[in-house]
Length: 224
Image (cartoon, rainbow, N blue to C red; front, top):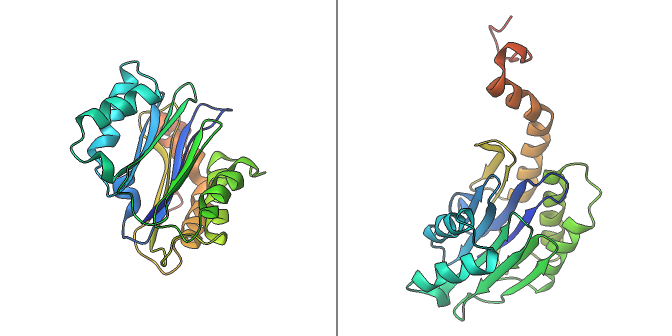
């Protein structure tokens, strides 16, 4: 039902994830990030608790592989879970249980993991990672979205995708980018449109939070 890319930006140390699915509101269940700690994709037959558990283990000092192993040791149904992890050093880990749905594939990249289930083709995941790694986009978000677009062009899921999302954490206690398309005919295209809307305003919203006295005008009716 899902294909995703989890990654650590080697230039900034930011963590990010893009995801798309045939089910609604995929980003609300599958994306788990923590600034300075790591990023986890918990998908397939999703148990969101696993994302929090793995991030807690990473924060306590475990690396990706150890944190994933600890979480699976407590999980009652590991055969149904598909989980990707990237930690603060860029090390990666992945688990796809024996009962993962349909065509399942995953690739461990450089500080990145691409994975999916119910895929149209295994190439979907291969293009997801290479589209990100070979992207010339100037932003982390742009590179992640290039990966997602490449995955869709390579076949996407076995059925039509309906939702998509992207989320980024940097060196602040909140997500600096958090965009979701919970149900749409073309969710990846709509997610790209939302990023193009958000991108030129991202830095302004950061300034408004940290130092509103230096913030630009808000650009809303009534703001002088």
